[in-house]
Image: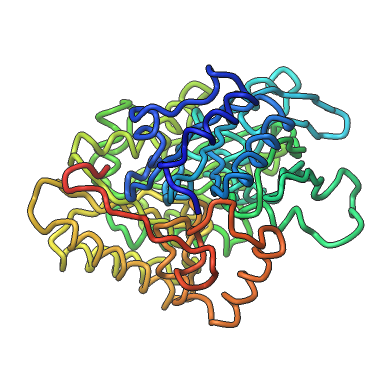
Length: 482
């Protein structure tokens, strides 16, 4: 691959295609784009491009190819697994200026959007039509649809309706050789292999999405949101399985333990019970009669598991405040510790109580504070290991605890990621979940799209899995984690 020493010719050709104002290459610009929101790993950024059309993305890819330089697609940079971190001076292709909602077909429940459309902006645009885009990551005020596609993002309200892949019908893609392909289609059963399904969640290793057909979801007729407070974490976790076992699949079930509940309450003043060891946010929606019946079932199951308090949001404003606390939780933790490391494993619901106990034990053994806030309904854990990066030796303890949490999740029959992706963060753990044959099959799929390893190289598959691997990665210095 090329290096920054031959950037002059590369930059000149990119400027010729896009103009000076949309090719950034100063040391400050490169520093800003060499990491994502995780701040776990720092890479080496080449020139940063801001295309506005599919044709301009094609031009960026072709120029990078001519200069034997890899490229990395980047949206809002809200990723938490190092997936958008450029390696080996890769050209960074930022799609945030491709932010048009191209068309809305309310009758057929589909919209065509560009990758830079912000997740929440799309639902706001759809609100007058009583429609929305179902995947709602906690970062939905900033994250883009293109990034959601890359990581197959989830969110609190994906329990009943599924994650991003279930809401993407077709994707126009600029392939690593600069060709444009349409994956999937609007037909109920598009002809051929489901390459759309392979691309969604590919973390930018298979190409760059430039137009996306998303499935639209009608707003429910009625929504009821319940806040349940428990004196024991085990009781809250057991209630999750109990609700679904009773035949109710809520729109969302979110769990927060005491520490994160207090931090979020101090931040947004949602009225969370501060004496609870854990709280559940349970939301049910649908026809009024079914919603009323589901609320009764949820309350009954909660009482069977020794719930301490039950609160039903009285109106839309109260409901929004309860959810604001949940979605602001990660930002609120700065009131507790300056730094955190967030994990993203998934475990079977029936093992939730067991794995939660292990998470607390692991954190205690490594002398770390842990907060838990997660999509409990589908077992998607998000333990936050809290620490002060200025403390000598703390990063080693954080990494060791994180590795044990991953191992415990996999031992319980879980998987590495529910929505954040593998990126760089979980790359070294892939061999714990997949056999060598599994990894070889994934590498062959990747090579079918990108035989020369130019598109976001060095991500997802373990080092040594393909000839495209690079090793320019370095850890962020002590004290700069978040």
